[in-house]
Image (cartoon, rainbow, N blue to C red; front, side):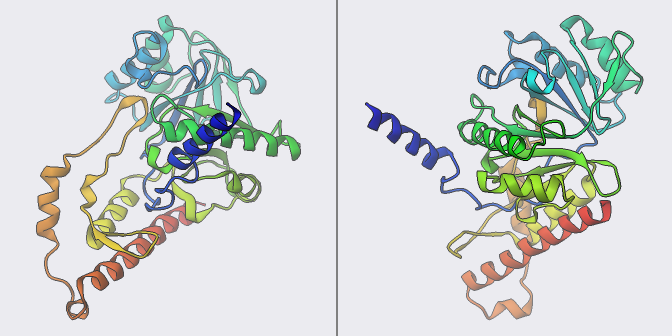
Length: 340
């Protein structure tokens, strides 16, 4: 019996965990959601969250919060996304608490009957909530997607990363400085482990950085170099809070120009850049019709520069793919450096 149980764990890790074949196959820069403000609603445990919290009749608080944000989005000046995080009493997160970044404030004990007024006061009008005091929060916050019922990859990778962060925080005596919690779907389960870190940058401002393909090996690096040293881990960086469509457009433009991906074995294949889906928090998505837009991209491929025409197709695709991938990372990191 023990052997079968252990085999199941190994099988899960190979299929969905850090050993899965798709790890590191996709470029990460520019894949983070475009937003200016991140709202976290603390609600129950990640182990019991249904696949779509924002539409679950059994979970009226997150459902109403998401629906109200969607209904009022034209009235909200800042690009605001909503994510659910787990209740963690050990770091002061109780059911119904709301965290807001980059404001670094917390409101306690939001109820269904409070949602409309809360959104109006805080997120639309930009004022303190009239029904409850705001509390300042400090330190760094690490959110790890662990939404198992939404995608098994995050369900496997997330809890392992949280455990590793917790151990490292304990061993380095950072319990009062760094807080870690599970969060719901943030977009890009294929990049699991997905980690979002809110911490103070070199200028003293609150920055929110997204990472993908994070494994336990990177946990001490993120704690030491990112949180304490103010440096990003380039190879796993997806983007950051406050980078608007300027960077997204440039990344997409470069992806269309290259039109290729290169796998870990060096093989190249053609793809249309429009086939991606940017899944927003709280169930909002901006997915595009890959079939409809693929034709436009195909037309736009046009003629290759003369220096490529004498090469065989695989050589051309590989060269353009590598150049495009390097350019995407360079552009994304360039925007990050400007913001620091």
